[in-house]
Length: 201
Image 1: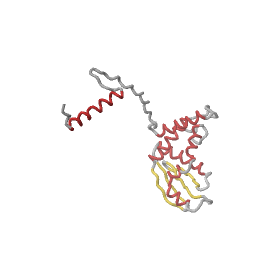
Image 2 (image 1 turned 90 degrees about the vertical axis):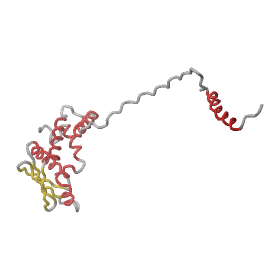
Image 3 (image 1 turned 45 degrees about the vertical axis):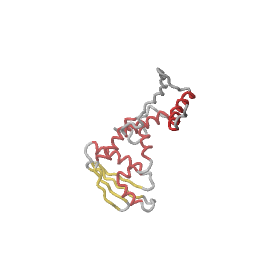
């Protein structure tokens, strides 16, 4: 019997190797063979949104969680409706008021005005923040009611560092309202029935 040509030997080895490998691994295929279905993966937990979709809703929810977590909370005084009304005021003043500002020695005078609900919100916000700034060492704020809102005079205190007047002018009325870290504490105080806005609406 004549030996196979080299090309045929190579072809036979190429096709025989996978068959032997399958036999060794226990996965050889035979006619009519069926496969067991693979085990189904455990279903992933559904994703839960992390944002409530509305900033005032989120602010109230955060305060509510803080109150529930604090065993000292006096629920007979808690007033989340007062906080909601304050957040409405914040929106009115920030988004719907007109602010005309001029520089004066030491700071600014800002005439902040609006119509209807906005004018009322301006007055409440200005009075509350004027009282808060009384305890600040850097700023002094006085508030005078005018038609449609207030005239707010904000100047550097006598003990304020150099550059405070320029900072006041840069911040403007709305920047002064949000300046510092007091505002979140103010919201908590309102919700507890302790803030200047509590039960005023």
